[in-house]
Length: 352
Image (tube, rainbow, N blue to C red; front, top):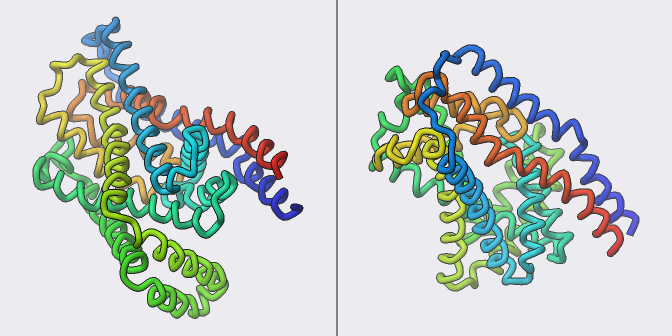
């Protein structure tokens, strides 16, 4: 009991107020700096704020709601529907909150295992659910990104308004290579030889520089074996449902930017091909955000957004749209998570 109480309290310690405020300060500071540097008088003269602006702005929030709904559907499938809709909502919101206050390269995966476990799933199965969730996310990127590059065009995705890529393509492809390697590693462990992968990981972590983490890797290997035994028995249709929910979630999230462009510049501003190009650019942006050391990619995300989409927007408007994008797709999770987390921890402690 004492150990569980300490673990619950440590969750709150890991999400102190400054960790919530820090990404907001970083993001708004970078946005303000970019705006002051690039603002052009008359930038918003062609923007007509009215009913349709509000309508499409609401639709952009609706896209995020669809994204979260897809994640809720997926985690219910992965838990064999042991999670209620309310439990799925809590876990997803807390998971997104954890991702929002940790560097993009770290994410909220490790804390997500704790969240899933405290909702009534044993530790080994919780680890499996989170690992499979991560696998499906990376599989989406691995399959969709090269297809988007082929169909939309390399220059259309990586070219900027001045025609250069400033190395963005190298960053994106490096991140893509990391994702593919991760998928191959998990695929081998899940579906082919989990015992062999565990032995390989333990062998690697015999190195002096890595030896201190060998005990944790041994546990990860055991969790992978248990996950493999459970999920290999899944019928193909269940995998298809889970992957379908994954695709729906990410596609809905990407269409947020398109709906915001329509909100400010009108539905006829971009043609159909342009909308798909904006979609493809966002695929590259999310892969590049892997390298960001800031919480939730704050600052880096706004800068990359402005650079990548400047060619589709009036001069100086990219920064303003970047701020709206983050207001819709990022900051709400900080607010909702900060509200839910203390109540959730108190409820878990009371139940224990």
